[in-house]
Picture 1 (cartoon, rainbow, N blue to C red):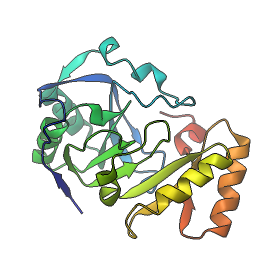
Picture 2 (cartoon, rainbow, N blue to C red):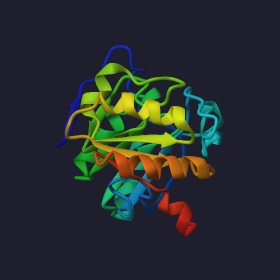
Picture 3 (tube, rainbow, N blue to C red):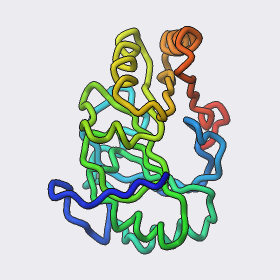
Picture 4 (cartoon, rainbow, N blue to C red):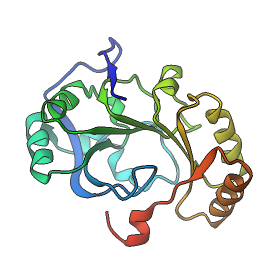
Length: 212
């Protein structure tokens, strides 16, 4: 289902440029869409501060160049992907409406990866919500989540996942993803899924393959 979200007054004003860490063509490595041909647009800026984040270089927006939205759309079209993934950082720190409008005109399917800690902007076919206790999601994001992906490194993360799972729609796919360097997290997630069949296990398959 396409999710239409109007601009909100407390979102940064719409702009024709966005700070971009990188763009690349690969496969989606995580979640339900793992293995899908995907073009990634990684935006800069994040104020969530996950200690185990594997893209900490994306946090300071001012360290990355601003790119024109039209150029990003043209680059996405040229790669002919199955899906476009807007990720970060925390992409919702920026107004995403101009970017998603351009991608939508090109008939591209648009996915968002977000912590949900900032107001939603833009139009998406799929929203992957990965809530973090360091900066919890806004309440109105839960009903719009297509999939809920909780990172697991210790028992407290399982407690957090249980609470988060109660806030999403019954149609939302619920995933536990072990923190990459945590063998404890992997075992906890594995055992939890075996005893809670409403949850699924998500692995970072791109890291297993050694690709981006």
